[in-house]
Image 1: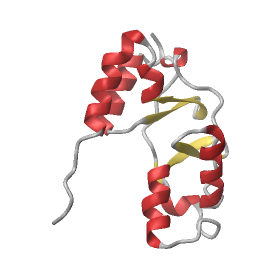
Image 2 (image 1 turned 90 degrees about the vertical axis):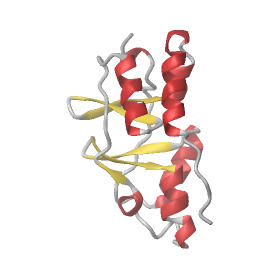
Image 3 (image 1 turned 135 degrees about the vertical axis):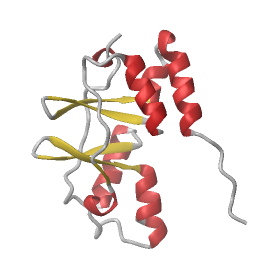
Image 4 (image 1 turned 30 degrees about the horizontal axis):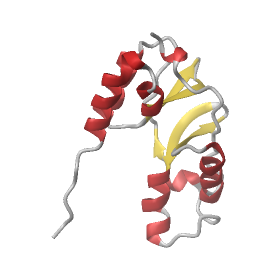
Length: 142
């Protein structure tokens, strides 16, 4: 099975100069936990709900005055439509990421999430393994 068979195609993205509030609004509108950051159609970063929480809100920044560029993770690992889904799941597990932007000819064409993998019966084990790698428990600093 190929990534193109399970990826979500209707993907919202933000510009690096958009404010953090815009990124949060898109996440809410699309019910997603991250949005790719695109410049001239190319993926240059990704911003997650966690980025907003830790790099903006927790530091006391106003979401309307801070740009996405200031909090995004640059140069995210990406997949491609013809990639085998097991390979995509392996990458997600190794890199400890929940979402993988999918690009073709340098342009964003979709996104694969752990949820996309989990709903496919033949991929359930891959999704579980990736989630285990990502969700290692942490202990509070004492």
